[in-house]
Image 1 (spheres, rainbow, N blue to C red):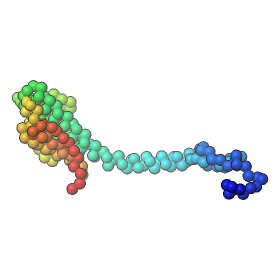
Image 2 (spheres, rainbow, N blue to C red):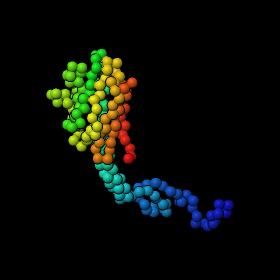
Image 3 (cartoon, rainbow, N blue to C red):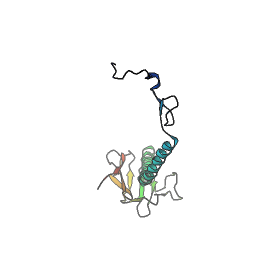
Image 4 (cartoon, helix red, strand yellow):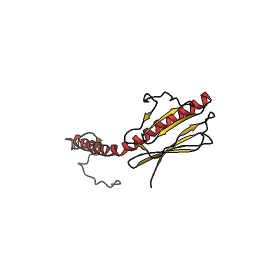
Length: 178
């Protein structure tokens, strides 16, 4: 035969077909049914859940530091915005020894903000610490008095928050490697 299939009177092409169904057995009519059994699906799902459970703790410490950096960055941006809108200098005071910070206006009065105590201080997550301490002072133009950098650390994860003096721009990035 041209297809290389031996010619026999019992050959029936209509019975040789593949169908995708749940189950892995040969049907009574001679068709082969392929698919996944419920047990196979449960095993794969259990393996995926186990891998996710192992990965989550490793990512949480990084996420905690990043979250704290974003909180301080938000207050730094708010402090800069206050300086520009009131046309006065404002300062983001960092107290590394107490792991806290607060934005204050030119008169030293704390700016209101979420999660601040009665004196305007906001506390870092207990698992995160400042490894450097600098004050972010914004001029009325929104520029900074001097360039600053502030490091955050938790375990092996370190982030750097930088302020550029000429522009007043702020940038945060994770420090990778030794």
